[in-house]
Length: 114
Image (cartoon, rainbow, N blue to C red; front, side, top):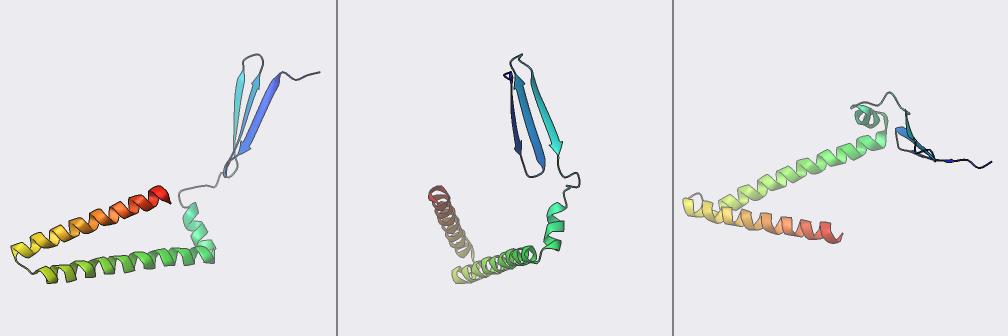
């Protein structure tokens, strides 16, 4: 005999979903949670467990520290280059404005075209 229903199931990383439909217009949705131990700290536990994730985390932190130091150095050098008076402050603000616009435009273009 032929079945009058259709069943579809798929699996997400922590959830299994099953959808069933029949000719009698009834639709059922079943949801099974695979990992009840998932929490906000799961990522932290993974970083603590796997050495390569600790290295990736360390490289990311080092990148941010270097970026902050270089940004501070650029602003100190730029401020010293234009002087401490009002005119120097205006010129430095113009420079930082052009720098921000150029950086954001390049970032947008690279994001758009890959």
